[in-house]
Length: 151
Image (cartoon, helix red, strand yellow):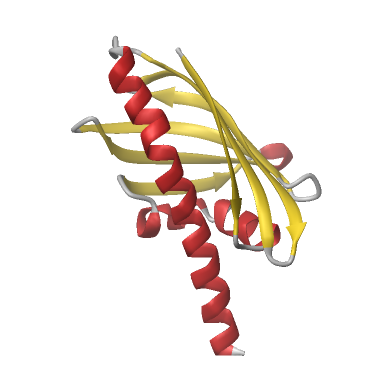
């Protein structure tokens, strides 16, 4: 089992970042290692997303139920099924700092079906989170720039 929380201040409005985070089907375009994502709306505002990622040289598939709360700036998820994870729950929490900046907190609690040595787990989780969060920031800024050009 591994729990982690990553915090960073990003140069993007939280509304723009939120909009990118909930576009799950677009993840393969900008999230490193994500090769497939397909979302299907469920009852009560839940969105079920099936993912395929390259993780530790393996093709990993998993399905998460996402619940978004735009007013609170939060997107949470829970594991539905996976060939690799026993547990995968987490949350994005976004807070406006004004002047086009956001405080981002990314929380994750995972457990694997196979034993993973601690040093690999630490590198996998803590080493990849900064880059993954930055990819969302870049996508949000890219998307808002494209919309400005199209206006």
